Image (cartoon, rainbow, N blue to C red; front, side, top):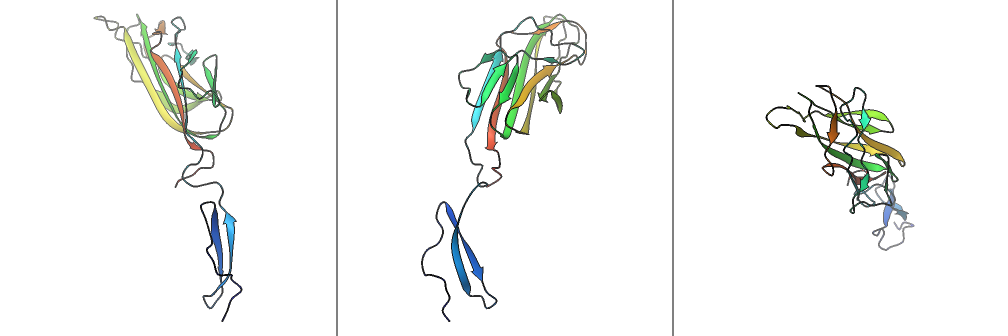
Length: 193
């Protein structure tokens, strides 16, 4: 028996066929539906990279101090990232990888300032503890690293903060050797593919 379906090709790169089948297994209707959202990630990746020339801020304090990133590197997508007082505001929602490496020096025996990711002023559960200043035999420089993935909303603010995990005393950054990189890897609503 004939159906009301018109012979032809349905679907395209932007439309998917929606098919209705009756109890006898016959196709009774077909229509094109626009494909939206989801898919293989959608949107485009973007990178924000920031460094610090600061050499005076003590990063070995009892309460977390904002690492004073103060230079926007040339590879930064300035349409998505803005830097102000060490804080980076992300314009686009999506999944991001946040990476930071802080390099520091000081005359503190057993100094170990942390590196921790904060979003909108809230500490996240990712802390770098790998650096250690021995302050003996010329060992007065070290670095610390932290990295994690986050789903960020538009206008979220990212900071890296540091506090003393061991050894008290002043520890400061080494000019130009600390970097914060934020990369969008999946656009908001992208999902898997």
